[in-house]
Picture 1 (cartoon, helix red, strand yellow):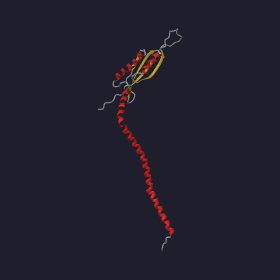
Picture 2 (cartoon, rainbow, N blue to C red):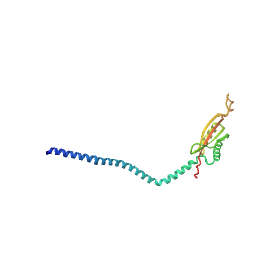
Picture 3 (tube, rainbow, N blue to C red):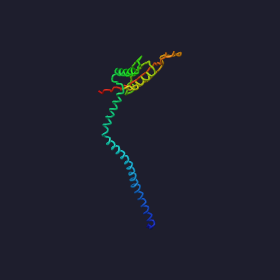
Picture 4 (tube, helix red, strand yellow):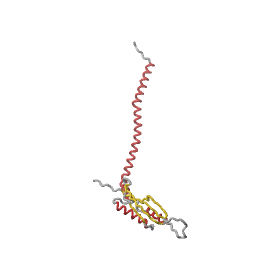
Length: 199
C-alpha cells in the first residue's frame, strides 16, 4: 500500500511542524529568558539601593569619628545630671545639700528630713528619696519647688501634700492672720548603677 501525500496535506504537516517548533522555542527559550530579564531588573533596583547605601556610608565615614565624639560629650553632659551613685553615703549627702540649698534660697527651714537608702529602680538606675516637711508661705513653697526644678541634678517630686498650719474657726482680727502652709514632700534623685568590674 502506497501513501501519497498531496500538496495540501504537505502544507498542513509543515505548518504543524512550524507551530510545534515555534511553541518549543517560545516555551523553552524566550519565556525563560524574559523571566530572567524581569528578575534581573528587580535585582538591579535592589543592587542600586545597596550601592547608594555604600556610597552614603563612604561619604559619612569621616563623620563617624566626629559623631562618636559628640555622642561621648552628650553622654557625659547627661550623666552629670544624675546624682553620683558610686557611694550611697555621698549620694545621700549630695541630695540633702541640693534640697537644703533650695530651701535656703527660698527662705525656708527644713523641719523634718528623712533620707532613704538607694533602692534599685531598674537595671540602669537606683533611686534615693528624701522626705521633708517645711512651713512657709505659698510663695516660699512655690519658690522652693522652682529651685528644685532648676537644680543642677535631675530631681523628681514624687509626692506633695499641703495643709494650712492654722485652721480658722472664725474670722481673725484685721492683720492677725498669716497664710502659712505645711508642705510634706518626697523628693527623689536617680543614681546610675555602678558598672560591674569584670574579673
